Image (cartoon, rainbow, N blue to C red; front, side, top):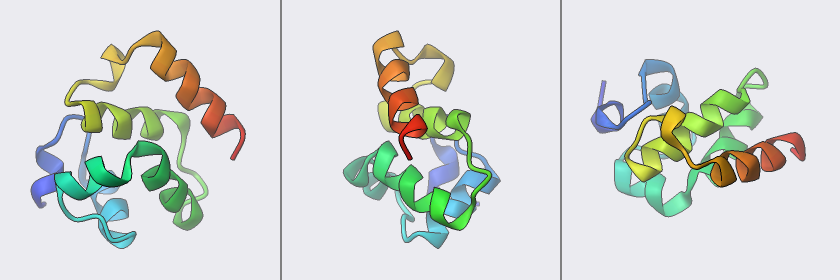
Length: 83
């Protein structure tokens, strides 16, 4: 596993998806953001779920996805439901 797996919430599966869409470093993930990264992952993996989106946002923020602010979770859920 590479650099991305050192981030909170990023395991082997998410790291492989991120690499597939051209995100290979934590900086690239932060720059593109969780929503844009998830959008591209959803194109290649239709089973990508809301918890994966939460995990990406937690990685961007440097915290466990369970510690995301409720307002952030609400925003992400709205985004997910509108994909």
